[in-house]
Figure (cartoon, rainbow, N blue to C red):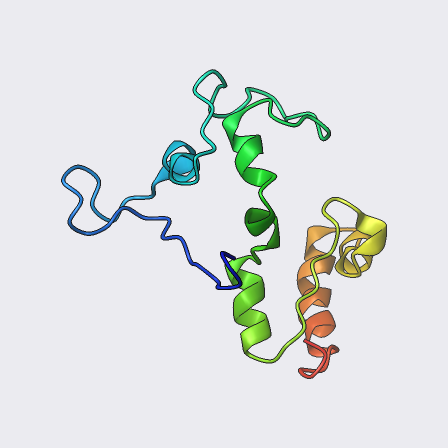
Length: 128
């Protein structure tokens, strides 16, 4: 937002760019356009950034920008534009992911192949 007006930033170079037509701009160019690029920092830390670090790399500077944090994923936007609710389950938490109850219950791959279609047909389309 700038002066109460939403401004969209193109993440691709324009079609008439002499070297990078229609290619992604990358972290460096995006930050340079905003006056936030820090040449003394690396582009992306070799390992995960510290959660509370203010500026350990340029990738984290970008990730800490409010407009970057507020941007929904294309999957979420598409689902919500169609009038549906998008719920992402926590990764790698089998106790919170209902499908894991089906995967974990089967003794063999053959049993899984037999039970999977039954499980899928047991869910109403309106629930999906």
